[in-house]
Length: 152
Image (tube, rainbow, N blue to C red):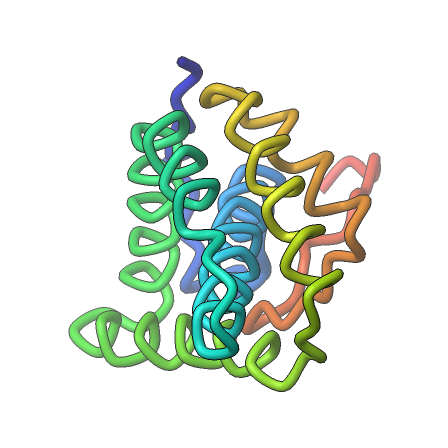
């Protein structure tokens, strides 16, 4: 399984999210998307938890690594208030998906998606590609860093 590396750049000064942090956020978004859909489906009596649990088991270390990168981002930006800001971020993610429509077909799609994500087996690039395909909605505090080839 690939691990996400934490660069030593000071994010508190830059404020924006670099490629590694964005990838970690996308893994977290995918996890949140699947978790909330699983809960919504369960509330309507459709059980897709087995597929979600396969996703978690297959990607456990990558998810842990992504969460560590995210926490590091928040620690760099917010210091002692990092946990508060991280919790707000995680709650905002759940809220993004909480109001989505829920139907038997959505639940079936969620199970297929969770199984697809499980087949990534910890591959960060595959998980990021799945989230990108689904339409990653960036709500990153400070936004994504722009790419520049200027000599600064």
